[in-house]
Amino acid sequence: MQFSSAIKLISSILEREIKANDIPGQWLKNVSVTFQFDTEYKHKCHFWGSGLGGKPCMCIVKITTDLDKIYSKEFGCTVWVHNPKREQRRYDF
Image (cartoon, rainbow, N blue to C red; front, side, top):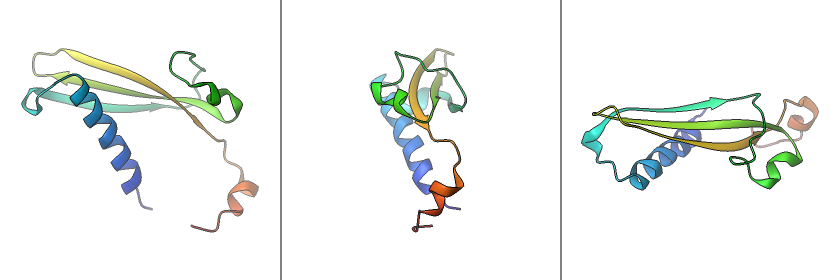
């Protein structure tokens, strides 16, 4: 399996949040990205199309500096439930 696209996406999310908070690289102590599946729909985190199909999930970014200040942000997204019939139509795997 190739995870390069997912790793690039996670890296871009982290870079964007580090730049948005003006955190120099030497201040970073810990950075984490957590995905929570089977979560409740959160109006402030999910956009309107998230409720149209699939299951809501959350992406939580936490950045800790060397002085233990924590920057945190939540993003909402939607994932589709495993459906073998739908997936068999995909020919690019």
